Amino acid sequence: MGVWVIGLLCLGSWMAPGVETGDLVIDVRNIEREEGAIRLALYNQADLFMQDNADAWGGVQPVKRLGPYQIVVPNLPFGQYAAAVYHDINNNGRLDTNTLGIPSEPYAFSNNARAKWRGPRFQEAVFPFISNRQQIVLTLKSWGKQ
Image 1: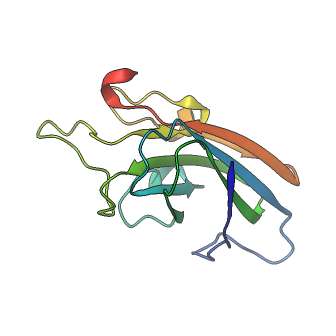
Image 2 (image 1 turned 90 degrees about the vertical axis):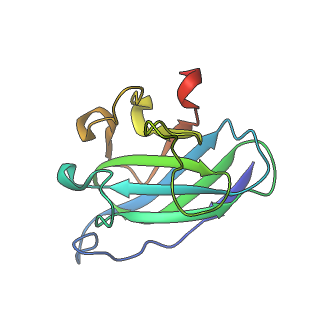
């Protein structure tokens, strides 16, 4: 398993002095194609969850092999987060959809939140981040295979 360590981008109110932090370890599984990139976003506010141009932490990891990828977000402030990830197979910077708006690229959400006929709500994907090192697993799925 490859490890991808990235720095936290300070966006908006993400980092305040004296806030406890830890390392969030995200295992992205079920990568079936050796191309494109894994795109990840972490949200800490319900009203911004999955909104374009939201105040979210984001990261991109090129896919150079099959198998799981491990992403480490160091020094993440303790709090409530929801994670969204997708495999941008054609590396165009967006989740591709068909004419009905159905995703044509694999995706996943924290808590394995379902996203079949609608996107998940923040409360379905939110998890508490409260330890020095915490791990979550995001298993990519295709819309028709859920």
